[in-house]
Image (cartoon, rainbow, N blue to C red):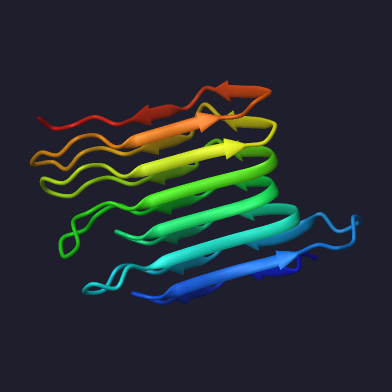
Length: 178
């Protein structure tokens, strides 16, 4: 069993959600699993932030993780993104946010994963970083989107990198409407 498992709904709009654990026993590899909904959208001037950290082991991020106009940070020794991560702008708070993913060893953006930080109306797309210390796998049916808003705005920034091995099969979209 993992040290932390979310299969429900965590909601803290305008606040901070932290799921963090450290595996000190090398026999335990599954440290964090999310199969539920985690939501920390911006409210007024209060940005929502989500931190998912599995030091010393594996993190499996499925379900839906959303911080519209905010930030999502996830790190682990081995990190698998299977679900949806979203920091896109919305009607009230149009600015897109930032998604930063880091794995000490291997980062896998699995088939069907959707990671997006799109602008809204005339705002720019956000920033998506998918980095690892060894290997990053960006599978064929996965998508990274940092598009400018439908009314204008520039496309955002996406980086997929690793020092030893990078497999890029998925789709990246940083387009701008105009």
